[in-house]
Structure formats: structure tokens, C-alpha cells
Length: 318
Image 1 (tube, rainbow, N blue to C red):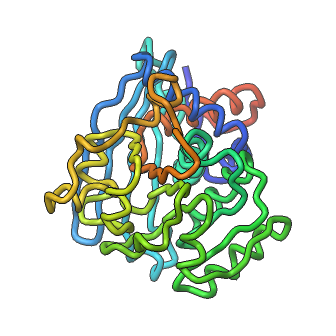
Image 2: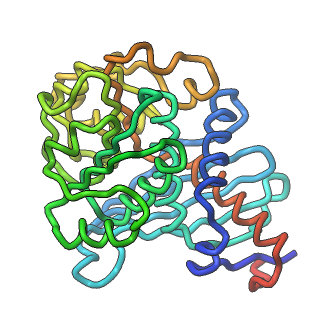
């Protein structure tokens, strides 16, 4: 047997957001039905950042993502997040592919938030607020535009250049530069920053808003005023990860929010085991930490496409 080697250009050619949305939603359903396996994410902290090991198995496949988060990399002209996936045959353990996963991480994170919005936002949502206009904002926009008929996208970032670049990248979508308050007043709000203090105030969030809290992905990070969580129906991707490193982690550590207050998980909602939005004035929050089944579901999609198309490099790795 041989192992496919898929670099960033190959992965980019093989990815499509509509297919990623379907693959991630199906992975959530399989997880809720007990057909997936996923140990907790493991963290390794080093001087300038951290590494995360994320293993998971789905029917017919298994794999692990090794991802680094080094915030200072931008000054070195490197991505702050870099990742690789080893994708294995579940029955034999053979490494079927090694693939670049930084792009996969961005796509599956955008997809998971948009899927949360599909179940938790108002069906007539027409405005999207992006707080943070970096690389993750691109895939959040792609994913949400694939589900909702957006009439206005309010974009805020402390970097005017980042906002301009995002607007230029999507000339066919209704993007506009806005204040953080305007972005937070949108029907669907995505927070996409590395903040370690609350930047979104409770009074900015209107009744009926859905918030995707994406930026907090490690201990000590938070973007929302804890009062937003207290006023909202909170859904997580994984309760243990969220309590230790998601949006709820700081309020939990401070004793002002309890994991018992979390309504449920997104996989439970996708599988129909819990109800999504209950009424038009309900505030909902999705605490997105990123779970390994998302990565392996997308890796499976990429691997199957690469095999079907052919022409990608292979090595006798084992």
C-alpha cells in the first residue's frame, strides 16, 4: 500500500465549502449516535505557543490532527495556526494520507459555526456580524453565505487593512466596515479574535441574536461579557473542551458560570436529541472549540476525492 501526500495546494483544490458543510454536519450526527470515537484534545504548551493533538475515528476511518498555535508568527510571515493530519484506514491502521490541515481547520471551523447558526439562529436572519477580519473570517463568511441569504455583513477589526482585504476578497457579497457595536447588533454574530478579555458587551446583543463564539480556543481566552452567557441558551461542541478552553472557560474558572448551565451539544441538536431555537427573542450562543471529528470528516472527503481524481504523489511510508 502507499500513502498519499497532499500539500496545501492539493488540499485547496480538493476542498469545497458546500461539501465540507455536509461532511461536518454528518460527523456531528454520527457522534451523537455513538458511531464516532474522540478522546479529549491534548495540549502541549511551549515558550511561544502551544501544540494540540486531536485524534478521532469515524466509520471506516481514523486519524489525528497535530496543530500548533503560535500568535507571534504573523511577524515572521507565518500563519499563527499550522496543522497536519495523518489519515488512517480504521481496520488496518495503515496511513492512507498525510495532508496539510491549516486550510482544513479554517474550513471546518467556519462550517461548524454555520451549522450551529442553521439550528440556532432565526430562520429569517439576514445580517451577519464578523468581529475579527483575519483568515477565519473568510471561511466563516463562505459557510454562512452558503446557508443564509445575507443582505448585510458588518465587519469589525482593529486592523483597517484586515477589513479592507476581506471586503476585496468577496466583491459579490454585501460587506461593509462597521463599529464593533454594529457588528454585535447583527442577527448572527461571529467572534473571531484571540482576546483574553471580554470585548462584546451584553447591551450590544439584541433579543433573537445568535452568537458563534469562535476565538476562545484555549484556557484564559474569552470574547463575550459573561452576562451574555447568563442571558443566553448556550450550546457547545464538546462540554469538557469548552469548560477548559472555550468561551465559557474563564467564567467557569471564576465561579460565575457553571457547566451545568450549558443547554447541550451541537451534535445532540443536529441528531434531533435536543431542540434548537425555541422562540424568536431567545439569545443563543455556540461555544466553538473545534473537535477532531470535524477534521477527520473533512480529511475523509479530501482523501476520497484525491483517490478518485488520481495524480497526487504517493510514497511507501510504511
